[in-house]
Image 1 (cartoon, each protein chain N blue to C red):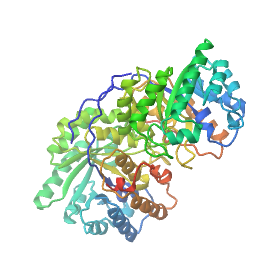
Image 2 (image 1 turned 90 degrees about the vertical axis):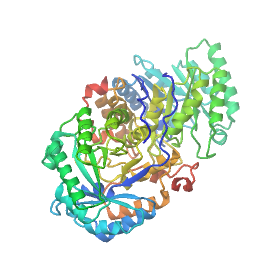
Image 3 (image 1 turned 180 degrees about the vertical axis):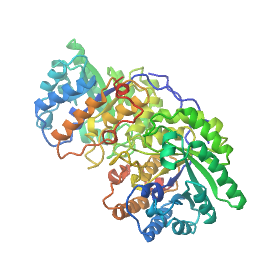
Length: 318
Length: 318
C-alpha cells in the first residue's frame, strides 16, 4: 500500500458545455429539423445548461445537418445567460462566427500531424497561422467573439497512433502566441486514461498562462468519467459532454460517444460540486432526443439506474 | 484553476479478482452447468487471472445456481497459482470453506444496519461476533484458509440510504479485532463517487493496520472505473470485477453490474500498471460468457471499440 495522501482539492463549481448540437449531430447522418434544435436548446437552457456548442460554420455541402447553424445560433443568443459557441474550421468560418456575433468560436487544431492533414488538409503549423488570421479578423471587426482553440487528438490518434506530449505543449504555446483567448485539450478518439490526463495537464498548465480550464473526453473505451475526474483534480472547471452520450468516433462504430452530460452531472453533484443543473429536466430532454434520433444508440448509465436514495434532486440542481 | 500538484503515485502492479462465478451468477436466475464453470475457470486462468471468487457456501435451496461450489472450488485449486475464494455468509459456510480447503473465505458484513437485517437477518455486531467464531473454527482446524471480510454498502444503501463513514471505520476496526486477516470496502449498490472513495479510504486506512488493500465497485451509475482510479490513488492493489460486467443490483434492473474485468484491465494497462492479463484471451472468454448467458445483458466498452492503436497487445499482457 502507498501512503495515502490527502485528497486533491476539487473545484467548487464546474460548468458542463453540452456539445450535442455540433459534436453529437456531426456524425449522425440525418438532419434534425431546425424547430427541434430550438426546442432542444430551450429545454437544455431550462435544465440549467449555460454553455452550448450549437453548430459549425462549415460549408453546407460538407455537413448539411449543420447548415442551419446561423439560425440556431441566433435563437441561442436570445436565451438569458447562455454562452453559445460554434465550431469554425478556418478563417472563412471565423468570419461568419464574427459576423453572426457568436459568443465563442471553437477552432480545432490537431496535435496529430496525420489527423490534421486528413481532417483539415493543413499541417498543425498552418492551422496556427490561420488562428493568427482569425484573431486579426476578430480584432479588426472590434468583435467580442471569444477565440477558443481545442487541441484535438491530444492523447493519441487513430491514424498516427502516439502523439508526443511535447508536441501538445508546443501547440498550446503556439496557439496562445497566435492570439487564442482560451485553449482546451480534447481526447477526440477515446485514447486517454486518467494517469495520462494528469500527466499531460501537468506538462501543459505551466505554459498555458491561466488560459486552459477545460477538457473534452469521449467515452469510447469506458474511461470518460475517470478522465473527467483526473482533469478535475488538475483544476479543470469546464467539461464538454453530450446528453445521451451521442457523438463519438466514426472509427469505432457502436462504441460510446462523448461523455454523457447526465452521468457527468450526476458524478459532479454526488461529489458536492455545483453544476446548476436540474437532473429531472435533463432526463426529460434525453427522452426527447431518443425520440428525435430514433435508431441512433444513446449511451449513459444513470438514466437507467436512477439517482441514489441518498441524493435529493435538489442537490443535483444545486 | 487550482494549483496543479504532482500525480499521486499509482501502484506498479494490480491484481484483478474476477467475481463472476459468484457475484455475477448470484442474481442470474439460471444454472450454468458445472462443466461450463470449469471451462470458464480454465480460460480465465489461461488469460492470466490469478484470483477468482468461485462460488458461495450458502444453502443450495437459497441459491441453486451455486450448489456446485465445492466441485468448482476443487477444480479451481488444481490451477497453478490461482487463489480461489468462496463467499460464506455464516459459521456454517465457513466450516465448509475450511473443510474444502478454500484459499480464502469472503465474509460480507453490511455497514448498513437495515441492509444487514434484510440480507443476513443479523445486526452488524452479530456478524462481527460470527466472524470471531469463524476465526476460532479456522484456528481450531489448523487451517490456512484466509479470512477476508468485505464491508458491503460501505458507500450507501438502497434500503437505509446514507451510511455513516464513522460506522464503516468502527466495523473495520471491529472485524480486525475479531480476527479477520484482510478487510475490503464494497460499493454494493453503486452509490460511490471518486471523492467519496478517497475520503472513506483516508478515514479507514489508519485503523486498517495494513490489512485493507482491495475494493469492490459496481458500475450501476457509470462511475465504476472512476472509483477504481480513486482507490488506486489511495494505494489499493486488488480490485474486484466481472468479465462482461455481469452481476449487479436487483434494485436497478437493466443497469450495469460489476466493473467489467476487460475494461478495468484496459485502464490499468493503459496507465502502465501490470496485471498479467492477456486481453485477447479475456475477450474470447467474454464471447463464451455471452453465449452461455444468452439473454442476459453484458456490459463494458472496450470489447466493442477495441484497443487503441498505441497499445500493443503485449503491453496489456505485461
